[in-house]
Length: 322
Ligand SMILES: [Zn+2]
Image 1 (tube, rainbow, N blue to C red):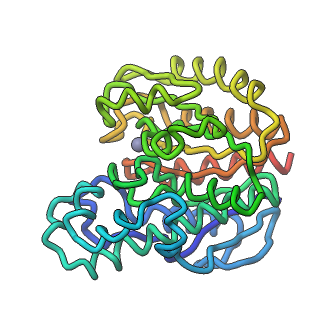
Image 2 (cartoon, rainbow, N blue to C red; image 1 turned 90 degrees about the horizontal axis):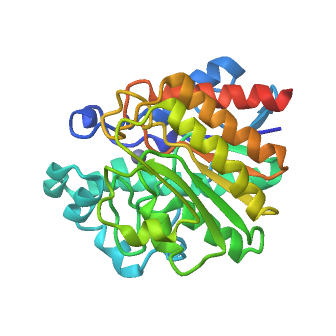
């Protein structure tokens, strides 16, 4: 029975943040409420098994000592300065905002999200397939937050599971429109985590050839690339990647839907149906091989980003039920 990971604590920001950054800070809640209607789940999350779905939520946010599995103590300390958070989130007025406010509306929800990602990975190991409705902060580096990412939840989950001896060989598939430079930074000298990345090569992150060099499969696309081109590359490359590096203990899928046409930051041109085909392809290819899959929604800057997530979850649950 697949797992769905949600907590009301995932809500980031405040009404009006949308005017400062294109991210929908209530996306997790919107996606959850859609799924709650479909599957008869309680409005505020919880822990229960209903209609072929295992609903779970993290018990609390991760602490600084926990985050030191990935991040330096010095970096974590600097988040007490508002300008550091403002730089990472790319919302410059936050530099002049009281830090307590930023902690409440951004930093603490992101700590909950990191805990949610670890829980998603754990649930994937338990049930075979788990979806988080937040997370996928693939730009955060050990000593620096950037690109709306303060903590690298992906690397944290991998390190925590490794420490517990639960997952040694991990495959990471990053199909967000932006290259996952933070994950590359954490595992720069650790080739045991295998990295697959299809991304817009003409947008942020710029001038980080070292990150692209770290990828095991690197597929940069031109700005404006469309669905047929994208899906053709994915259909060709993903099965080879999975076969080459199986067996693995866990697959983490960063499923940013900022690849969709009209997204303000992604710069690619997939239709909503292409996004669904992409996600369905990844889920089926991974599950056909009997590998546990943890899904993270990552980027997505259209008003309908939450609906793209719910469509993917719904389709994957239907496929699992057979
Ligand atoms: Zn992105």
